[in-house]
Image (cartoon, rainbow, N blue to C red; front, side):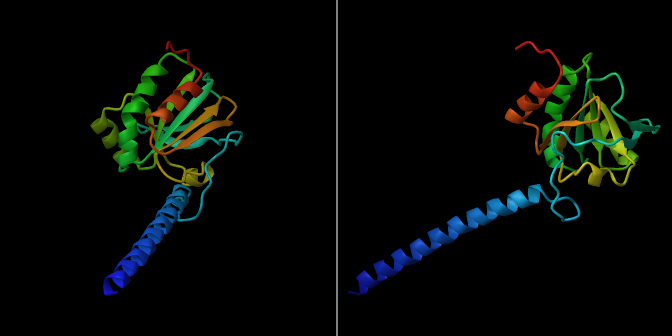
Length: 190
């Protein structure tokens, strides 16, 4: 009789543990989703959406010269790679961003790396990583808010009228790399 009670108790405890595990997985997924939408301030930030306007960016070019990205040059599209010099996900994305840079040479697409750090730290990162595309350091303190940066890396595709065409938040790997490449105004041989 005692062994039947023990087996019954073990079964109940096992079922309870299984239910708790399922609930924890659900809660973990909900928290991950919330963190994807949370900016540095801790407030929920919905990323830019296609059709949103992208305002000019005040910045410093890597050589230290003041500049403004206005989306009115001769390019059809602007691809912004917003990153942090300390972000492991940005670093993991870097080889694919460099691949995109190689693909857009002599095309109507302007790829711009947008560093969330000051010029000195950005310059060191560019040299250390041997970056093969244009990188700027944001000097506009409202950039993160105006561009609704919820995390890095973020890739934003903007047309020559300053209208957002697409936004990708997170690592640029696998299918996401293909999505970005297929969204660009370049002719690729498959």
